Length: 77
Length: 246
Image (cartoon, rainbow over all chains, first blue to last red; front, top):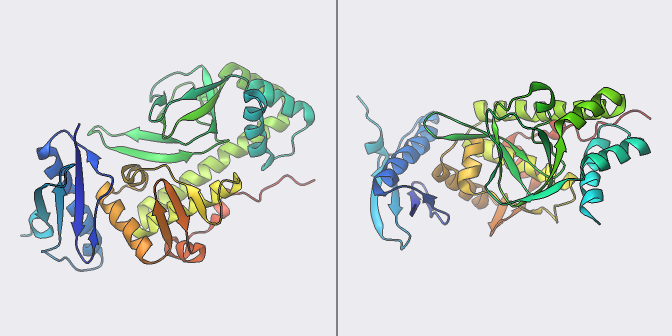
């Protein structure tokens, strides 16, 4: 399975040097959404959520494949 | 040192934390651990539901106790280090209720569960020591439940790293705060209920706080008190100072 890397851009930049083996780009996006929800849940516990914070996912050659913003990973009604 | 005496030595060192062993008890343990095999990294030693004929003891390397959920996600419920039993309880319970996988290449002693059962019937002192080892495993499991249920992400990972530091120190495998940490972000995440991405973020925070330094597969704890403080860590649950009265 190919490796995908997930870089975090929130209050700091955290680059992923290990990556995760996933079936395809679709699975990589789903993984990014799950990761964003996990990160967002932590800030929510502290009473804030910054919508423009994001996780970018890239392939092994560091080509950007997409990104998930914190405010698109959760539905607020 | 040959495999046989080395394997027996790892077990004797571990059990002597809990109980004074006689010369004949040590000889029995050495004989029991004479079948040592090498298992490659990331292989199942035993799977959930199996009825094993052996009790496995880690002599060298790292392994993990885990359960897999229906959706495929994995919860690591213990990290097993040299001297740790994988599955002592199967001598009595018969069937595995979780799996055990190597994290690195391991050298493992395969002890026939019938022999372990017989040993516990015949030798009270050894039975007591094995019981203590099981009780400490349970104590560690309790601390993991509290860790994963109550602490936030930073505290959870700090707690896990503190535990590994203390346990590696007992084994003499820490050099000025530095030890081999052969876990991926994903495996650390599986142990504390976080995604690998979230785990990476927390490790970065711990680095920026100057509590740890990572490089390759090594971890250096730069500030033990700071890391303990971040985790609210109290090592008493490891019962490392518990010794039989003379």
